[in-house]
Image (tube, rainbow, N blue to C red; front, top):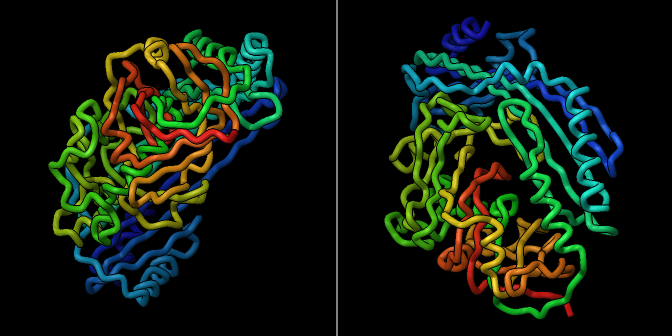
Length: 437
């Protein structure tokens, strides 16, 4: 059917690209140890891009009842006058990745309910507080075919579980996320992590404001990474809205920091040999030993800048929307941060006075293009003389990543999947912390 659609498109346009996606997911959630929801969802659809006379057309559908009409919708969209200076990629042999684990098919909702109940029971007993748990599995299939010989497909399996020990009377929590291509039990290490951080910080404390050491956990590192992702986005480079223009080759962070995009790491879910435009993926260093190495591009902005795509054109839909509705845009979907050499618990012991950012509120606050952040702590854990004394309410951490990330005290020797990538915990020196008196 897709091949036929390409042939129809070629009657009207110079180049044709079709993107097809099918996604199945199911999940369960527990609130305070009680099963709350069991949900299943299916998303599928097809999007079409055409190039005609140097202009880009686009349409999408959830079915192909009228292929001719579908193509003509894309033709009509040419009136939007989006001029392009690129061609769709030419088909080639790609790297073979292990993106799908058959065991995901044996993971039933019943098994997820049993695991969720097990986690809830163990953590509730260990922390004596409300525990919320969520588990989800999904299988996604993507196929991209174009008039230049590309015909790529991938099938990805994904499993994720989170558990949160809630502070009484608030939405603050200590959270751990486990992710894999197949079912993975919540381990003793995961239980011990939540239990230690929660029980150590149960008491509310009111330290004084000031500059101090601040530890970002893997699940809150995105606060900082978000600003770097914006600053290195080819769209923002083209529009000159990033402070990193002309900074390639410059030292922007502490030499301990290396951040790279690795779509080939198939030990974790989501690896890809090609992006959502059919461009071959590649490992892309972003920051290496603190030095800015690369910006990242899709076809559109890569052509605008005269450098071509870096294999980072992805359909990214905010707030869970359907990706077939959107055009590709520059995106770092496989970020990694190189770990350090410090044990997590030893890192805490090394802090004479500081805050652990366990959860962040308002990560979008501050001037993101400039690298500024100003976040609420939900919670922040206060450390003194290497011991967690309690949790802090009504507190904020603020700074600029191009200053904060120049002063690394230590990096954890392990990395974990989290929002926006795979990161270790990190301690930074002399970060501003404001606590309401």
